[in-house]
Length: 147
Image 1 (cartoon, helix red, strand yellow):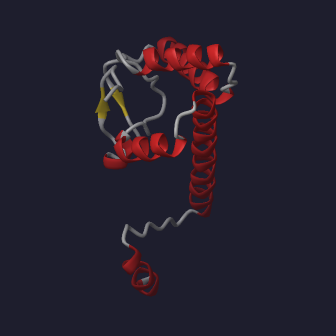
Image 2 (image 1 turned 90 degrees about the horizontal axis):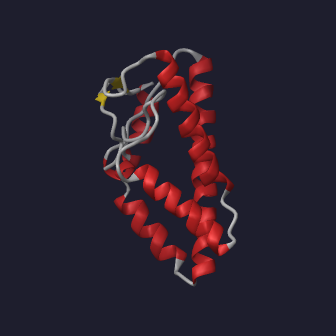
């Protein structure tokens, strides 16, 4: 283990180890699927930028540097709680309508709405109060997930 730490130390970051191979493998797969979803998201945004004649690289670079996840790695990783607040649902619906008007298909964004609606229904059935959810990092989260 000391040799691994020594090898990875110049790269920065934290070396995490897991004694359960199933956990380690699941983490690897989830990481890859997250990256696939992220790439698909940016491909949809690229299509919209193309339809508008906007520089997709400028959009992607700015959002990637300013997105909550870039300075708060725990943002958005809680499970079992829908997103809410005044901005996320409104902006998602606006982007879906905008894409529809441009004739650009955005199946991933439609799926974001479907997943959020399903989680909201599941949450309501479970009776868990929306203002007291615990995320995967152990932080209590409120009903607004907007930044």
